[in-house]
Image (cartoon, rainbow, N blue to C red; front, side, top):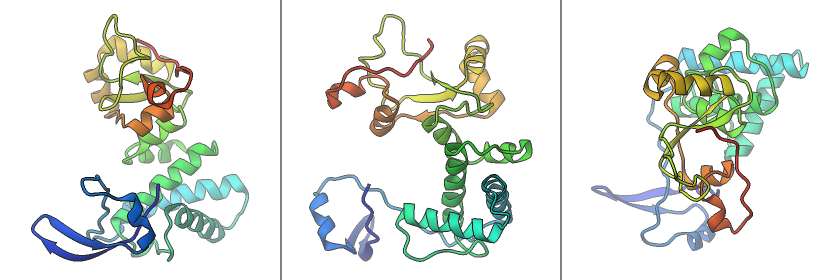
Length: 231
């Protein structure tokens, strides 16, 4: 996804006039298009966020054998800025709450993607983090225990419906291992979600294509390759 750090030229009620930083990007926009806006709300990183950042970077530092937390921090911040298209680095002493949350999500994604284990204490912390379930979904990892996960539906597909022909967009799904998926069916979805404090991830067209669930193949004109799912 392309990003453009635009400048707000004028505001009239809920109407904004912006100037693109790169004029070449105007070819991607038309009147009526939906765009995503990000906001810095002025709040600075909290002590809890800072502790979480350093705990996650500590796990990476131990895993990669750097034995130098400052070096690991520098490498991870550089990788984050490169991924996000951020030209100027940031400080964990006074960055915004929004930037801190983005960096924590990046660190969690990095750890899961590279198979870096979390300590039990840190696992409890990161499971509270916004975006945890989405990252687990990306890597097919159970959001409760970390084992290999299937895709569990928060909304029932329904008897007799062909789940490879329906759209899952707008529904919610969760990455659950076989044990927790079966538990979900035994106790009921509401009790399960309350017990484990999970909310599910709302499926977008991008997530449907990524997971290859539902009728994603219709628009892609590809063969059906279904992610294993339980009823």
